[in-house]
Length: 484
Image 1 (cartoon, rainbow, N blue to C red):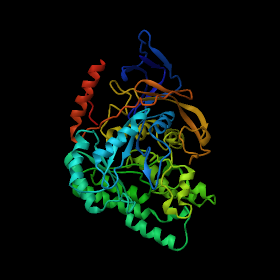
Image 2: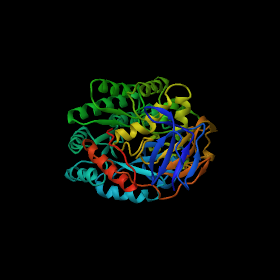
Image 3: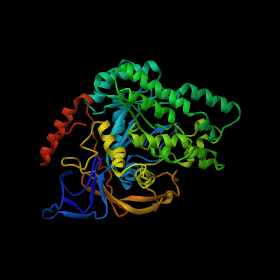
Image 4: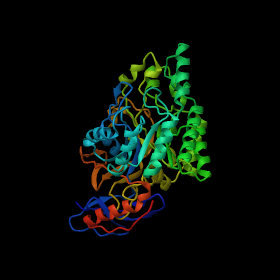
């Protein structure tokens, strides 16, 4: 059905203006003042609200088997949670087991994602290295539309890859027009620190943070950036949490290297003191890697978002329940790593960022949507309120309020790390490809409605634009080329 969003202020990453938005055939067909609604169109009142591109979360783990258990949020509930908070696309980590074919892992993740309620894409992880991996990477890029490959420098004995494997994979990415993304922590040093604390009888969640100090993240970030430079490819550092890691990214960017940094919303808000809570369950629920940091590191991350040396805000949504966390009751190294955040990212960031003056509303759109789409090469299909873009939109009420409470959340975990956080600024409505999935607190998400979004190799922007022109021509919508 044709829809007209009337009376709002359109906010993109580079400008804001009062404008109406006309939607038809899943895409935006017009943006302008005083648009006339076609006969039979549904009118959505956005008076007093902002109309923004729906959020894109570039870092999630849904229905992920890790550390002996499986995350509580599958693609159905994870994407419903996303839509409830204004996020209309996720990019999940497709992680083959060591020795498993990438092509088999991709098919596994596509089956998992059949219940997705919003659009989705994948990153493909490199968890081992041999000729089959080298060969399959080309199919992953050219056939499956995945242009990013995840590498773990941590989790020794499980997912961790060494420098030789990193270089080989990075060089292959360079030749394919793909980009490596990296979990940057020195896994060997972390392992030694873990053994030290366990050897002294310290087994609680606080030791998770002690064994992963900022220095091990800073060193690994520098090493990943250097290897990327030698391989001649860009690199994207996920969940950047420390001043040392941020400074490594900023230095490389100042020198002309193409490096991207991704803080997550938890690291922007929460403090390492969370791990010192005397309630073991409380502290364990917050165990994730890298861990929460002290104020100086949070300040550095905010400064990076303000200066542009850090580009996106994600969640690393990896939702383990309290009962699952108790697998590490007597050994902090066995606490499943991960927290939630999909439905809270936008309200928390708006409250702590826009409402405090740290970032503008345009910068908010940039770090939650537009920059992500541009970096991952799916802009302007995603990440823009523009003619021809997918009608993934959030109508944002800057005056709406709520206090975060686990008992009211959509996610299936039994707690929320932001419990009690007061938000001012919430989605009044969320639209996914033009369909209303949330309106005034009523979640209307349809299981299985989400579509897979292929992303093209980075040298082939013209190919992506040609594909979008062809698609939009079939929808009856004209659009111009836009190069990220």
